[in-house]
Length: 238
Length: 238
DNA sequence: CCAAAAGTGTTTTCCGTACACCCATGC
DNA sequence: GCATGGGTGTACGGAAAACACTTTTGG
Image 1 (cartoon, rainbow over the protein chains, first blue to last red):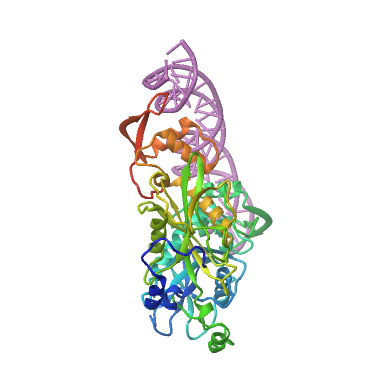
Image 2 (cartoon, rainbow over the protein chains, first blue to last red):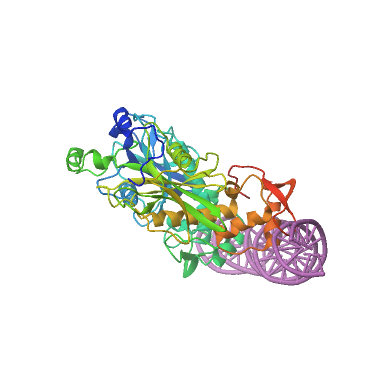
């Protein structure tokens, strides 16, 4: 964006700068990355892409790519998410913009990162021989390209925060779910056990979920009530 | 950043794209903007630059500019802050990355925004006839360029949040200050009155400030004790 | 002595946490 | 009838919120 130029520092003729570093640096390349999380088997997992070419061939990376002409940032993130999971109406939020991930491109590049939460049951991973997507447990990450560890850990921190004071979990669960399922999701992401009674009390008092009237039996044991989120869009508490 | 290319959607020969929209869009120009807040006379103010050239000549805009070759994002923000205020060791944090502010540059541009908090007493605004900087009350903003209103309101929201659970106020006050001064800063930013006793109890119990042993009398009235922040760097509570 | 600003405690309410047993169903 | 998972209430402690008067100084 042009915005305000920089006429303050005096002894810096902009023509000189232009000569030293033309387009290349003034227009550093920009990519959009999307950290996609899901919960499978009580395990927080992240979608990574197997790199089939240099740089970092053979390592794994957060899905992402360049902006298309005329495409907005969030549209690019939405498109990547759709490409990789087939999903669209899920939680997706800008995370952070990194200027220091890329140690390969001369002059560096800029990565605008987003993070998304998907219900594993609904996600359909793209099937391709190269640039293959795969879910990885956050507890056993493979070797990553482009300092992507940093992005993943930052995203996890944000996810944990969001979980505490918003209803983002809606995006990790099917339309109807039991309170135990919901609690498992929370426990998985927060990496600690929660008290069943306190958890239920809190979820119900926050008014973010409601009973459906339906029940679901799984194997032995008393059938569980099914609930749904009142709103399937981000809502912050208090 | 190159990261994972996008080999998923098949019928899109990249050579065609290149023809339709060459460098221009694949490397959309990037600027760094810095929202700089201060508190003057119980008023939250923001530093704006008077635009001396098109586009949006005569309107006011958030200070910002292009990245220099090899410069990191935070370095660019730090440099802008220094250029405009002469200050360096103040609170500065990335805010958000906007892709939709610029309705002038063909193909758009990307604005990575930061926000900073400065002590008005220490700030020395750049003196220049053109691109003149000036403090504006957030309650009486002038006509702004580039949808900058959106950025300012988002920044204010973040500032209010940060104020509640971090010590960022250190960056808005001189090294020594009275509890009443501190309370005024909080009230100004939060736009509501606070209870003196509860405020003091909280500030002291959080252990973020400490007595200096000094006192300060201003006009009539009992002299106030002077305090300082224990740490002049961002710290989150609890 | 009076105006002006600093400083100080107690009570109540609310929320988070700790904690253990009964209920409904399948096999 | 027993194993399995679902479902429930109460007591405690700490933090936030409400609320009014005394103290110290300058003029």
